[in-house]
Image 1 (tube, rainbow, N blue to C red):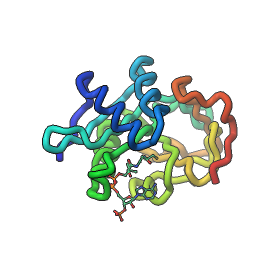
Image 2 (image 1 turned 30 degrees about the vertical axis):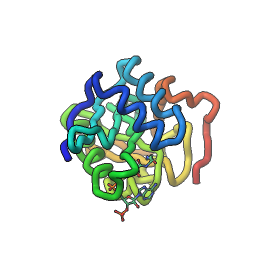
Image 3 (image 1 turned 135 degrees about the vertical axis):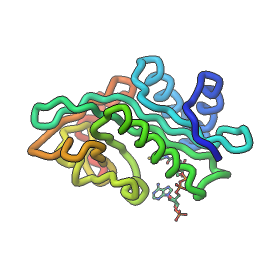
Image 4 (image 1 turned 90 degrees about the vertical axis):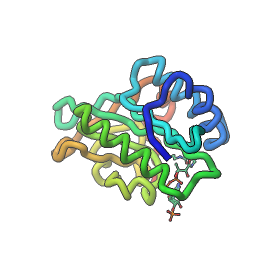
Length: 174
Ligand SMILES: CC(C)(COP(=O)(O)OP(=O)(O)OC[C@H]1O[C@@H](n2cnc3c(N)ncnc32)[C@H](O)[C@@H]1OP(=O)(O)O)[C@@H](O)C(=O)NCCC(=O)NCCS
């Protein structure tokens, strides 16, 4: 298995992978909108025997903490082909992406997902709880790539329109 940046030649395969993994087209549309908006910081594919078997996208989002603008990113979506799960591919994609983000100067990353899964990379709901965001609860997590980026009183994140969150303000995901 190897991990590399996605290319336009991968887009159709990635869309199919996302539609299968999420049983719908919302995530496939999200990655298209994030690409079209020029918001992608890093998008990676896992390739095995020349086939794309996993994908992750990290995109820009606006973040401030205690009035200080921070370079923020969102991790979404992450998907691995059913046939290739539980072999560490999802973890490798996340780890490789976080490394690239850190090299890009990203200071903090947020994700919406399973605490049991994302906790292993250091994502924490406690850290995210001081961020004003469209989400609250255990599934909304944050990770500092620069120590102290989310230290202080309060902050906020604003997701780009591509996430279509306008109608979900303050959704409780506990
Ligand atoms: C989540 C996903 C990307 C994990 O990919 P993967 O390559 O299987 O991940 P890894 O091999 O790194 O880790 C697998 C472990 O994570 C666990 N795991 C997977 N999904 C999980 C979830 N939603 N909550 C908690 N644990 C989860 C598995 O049980 C497995 O545990 P094990 O190692 O003890 O067997 C994959 O299951 C997937 O594509 N799911 C459908 C789409 C999705 O839900 N994406 C995440 C959105 S937040």
